[in-house]
Figure 1 (cartoon, protein in one colour):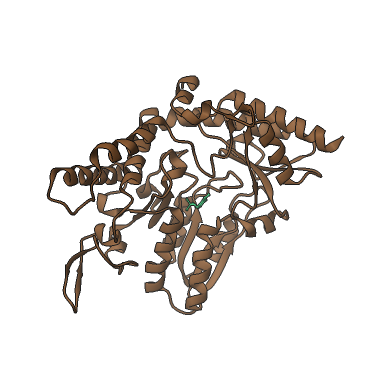
Figure 2: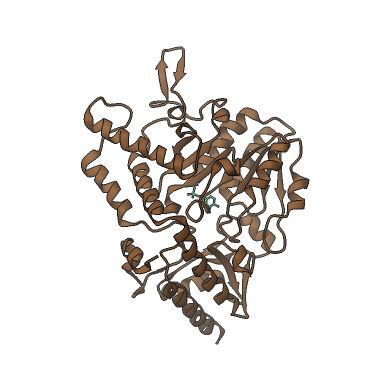
Length: 407
Ligand SMILES: Cc1ncc(COP(=O)(O)O)c(C=O)c1O
């Protein structure tokens, strides 16, 4: 990969923060956007703006064609068996809440079990916790090993014949680990449960095949894979979707309405009530095109090198604790750490002064922070468009922050 050419595709990467070159290492929170995505959104508003699925005029047809073409693109991107299995939401959070509010509401009974893991983001925990409370179901947690990976013995113990839903992140937004989705899906299915996968941290970094994973539902956000905010995706197995009553009602999702009765539109329109985020979906399409042109082989090679430099660099500091696996082979592009005696917010603020953007906090995973026995951590996360110079600047800035606080 020609990294300087790729960086030139992302206008914001050539700007400054606090008088220093921007070193953006908060990619797990949201990715930067290439010019191609920005252009696709403005192109739509400049030349193609109309509502979708409604007008008979050419402009409306053009907007509809572009919107629906992205559905095909997403289906191909995650290897969905058919386009009807894919519908657009606002975000991963919205997608996961949708599953809880439809499948969960319509299938759970008192005494049933929902199983999550100890590394879940609040988005894949709170909707299930609240559903369990509404249904008097039990929320159970698969524990982690000492290196932050899923404890398989715990998975086998927690998933039982009472389990109806297993909800798990494909990749952790804190520990940098990938969960064994295929294996978990087999276990869940053996017990008659479905598996709901939070793909927010996976889709930008590895090819996803929902059929090989055997995921019943798979959720992700556009903004974490170079696309705009405000657009998300939910994939669902068609046979499951066909059993579900929509969560929202109104325009777009009907085929016939009388005072007494409504016939719903076919899937997937049935699940997209109201005017969708048309420009967001078109922007997401441009992001997928960009990623596909680059290819995951090149993306993964670059990200593995950057992760190795980041992780190994952090491990050279004797007073830095890295959470999750310490070997690059097991580590995705997200690294959470703490520096002895310096508050994570002070570390992040010190780095900010050197133009380095990292996250400090609980990363929307407060129960995981309890497991790690820390209130918060610092988190640096890379994307293929980061350079070796970015990581070197980060490590040098961290050394300077340590010297400042430890003198
Ligand atoms: C693992 C994981 N799940 C879910 C989310 C929620 O994504 P969004 O805020 O786009 O809904 C995030 C965002 O950080 C995440 O990292």
